[in-house]
Amino acid sequence: MSPAEPNRRRRILIWIAGVLGIVVVVGAVVVAFAPSRYLPWDTADFPEVDASRLSSDQVRVLELLQSEHEQDRPGTFYSEGIDEEWCADFVSWIMREAGLPLSNPNSGSWRIPGVYTLQEYYQGIDAYAENDGSYTPEIGDVVIYDSSRWSGQHTNIVVSVDGYKAITVGGNEFGKVRVHDLDWASDSAVVGFGLFTPDSTS
Image (cartoon, rainbow, N blue to C red; front, side, top):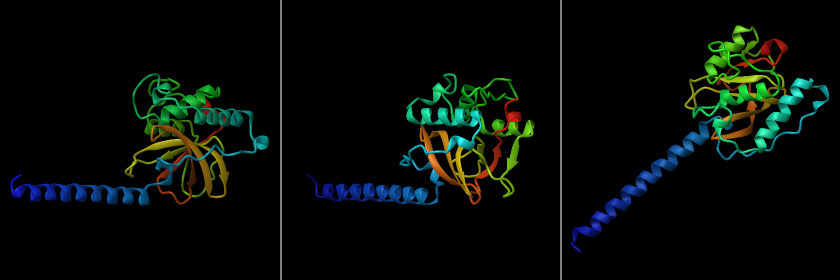
């Protein structure tokens, strides 16, 4: 072994340790500032919901969301086999299975694969509420998140509301269907809601 060999190994180890340190710091910053809905270790159970005041349509949506939360299906199950970001596909699939199909404004299909198009759909049928503090979401409403955050556009469905707090279920959250809390009034990523009304399924 040459005299320079131990120094070279030491430099390599220091370099590796430095890279790992940067990765840990970046990861900590992402966790600190990322919305709670995207944390991969969030394994919340499906909430208990009093269905006595809900419509039969809302109950059916809740039942489907709970069933899919208990499954471990790939995103392609909800997107007709297409490998793509599938949060909007999941919303579309749930509504179709509940007997309340959406209608893609571009193709007429039940499946709306993009969040922007999903928002456009609800706006087009006058069933969209901006998140400006004047509207309180209801069970079955579709949450629309903007694309200004590192996490990009996203969508999921409200399953419980308590004041300014909600619980939602969404697909394509770290590859899963997941439950999480949402402070919709203070989360600036929430731009609006697709309303769960008879008119929203026309």
